[in-house]
Length: 78
Image 1: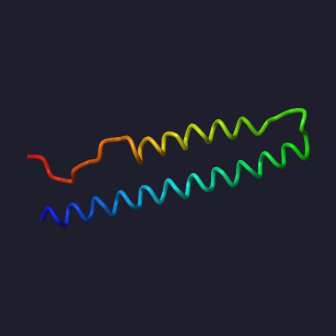
Image 2 (image 1 turned 180 degrees about the vertical axis):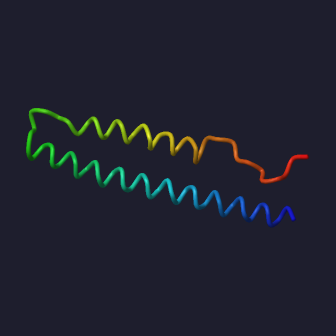
Image 3 (image 1 turned 45 degrees about the vertical axis):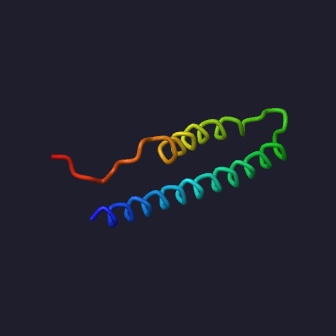
């Protein structure tokens, strides 16, 4: 029984890391595009920092949830 729980836990952790990697890749690609658009259209006002910071907070929360929070054991209490 513990072997199955460990396998399920490993699978969930892998999915969580993959989900974070996708989120990070989207963040980098979209924000690179926004920086390019900003610098090409209105280089005197750097508005790209606002979506970069806002989305960055969400990305940090995702990283924290994926890598820093203690993992649930999956065992039933009681």
